[in-house]
Image 1 (cartoon, rainbow, N blue to C red):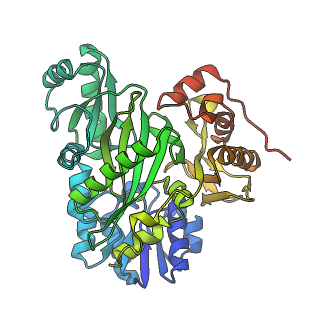
Image 2: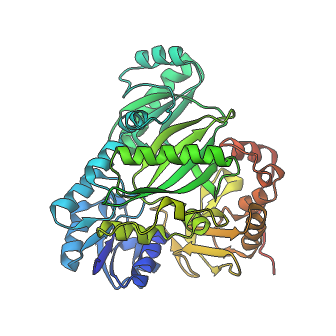
Length: 457
């Protein structure tokens, strides 16, 4: 097992990894930017090294500075968390060349599955259904229009190296496709330094289902069942739950087996996520694979009872998975709300600033993963996540009721948050019945007035 791990990240995920390492008896080295000098992950780690100014391009995305910190700190391994360099194949390759274990899959697999077109072909070879679309990048608007007419509108333009909703445009006709094609390429170039885009049939009002998988270095691949991630806006998830209320046992078995086949096909090691769209007729389609830890991994941990971060570390250290698929089951229902410093009543405008007071909910069936505290200043430089609130219970209804109670206790003063919106969603009849799709938030905001909610006494 590793003696010391560098966490190449910040915020709540850095805190999460440090806590897992401490329970495993592993020392930790935090890296931080000048803006994060007072961040909780810096305080909790055994050691910490500043790697640059606030902009991520000058700190958390600087491979040479992270490797220098790793060598200075004499670490065995680097955990990238999610975001930043977590799916950067070059970073993983540099770690490999420096004899520092990258806690994730091999660089060749990251590169393969990070290319959406290549990943789609791998899924097709594994026998999984894929969304109709281009076989690779589309080089011109003429080719895009020609393909769209063959597969039928609406279509969606997607960045080959994209994620987080960037470099994506939906088109319902030739004119909007031509405009969206160029806009998506420009955005992809700016965000990912890669202007390549591909085209897919746009599945209207789908459900977003993803399967958590684990693969060890002995060739064993297991799934930890599915998560439902359909409550999202602009492709950014707000609420996740496990298991999905849309899947019966037959469909669950079908979709999880497809995910395992894909992971086996690419000889995947570490934790990863296979993402699918489920249409209104019960057909599902592979869309991509995330070769890293997901933001919403706590939902799976609480539903299945497996610590995904610890398993990720054990796999990287060469240890085998110590259980079989038949040993795993869904033990309870779990829901996660991403608490962001954003104003949902004002088009989710970011709300960075100083947290004047901070009260964290607790009690039975409640978990909070956060790096924030009273007096902490949320910098405008990074994403706006304050933390993740997870509630779980014996069934979906008890999990929702517990989440509603926890949201009413969560008090964060000084910045706007998404809590009022999430409280309202927990009381929505369609959500409580499990009747929703990726179009839920747009419809909900179009019919509801979101007002600030004062915490209950």
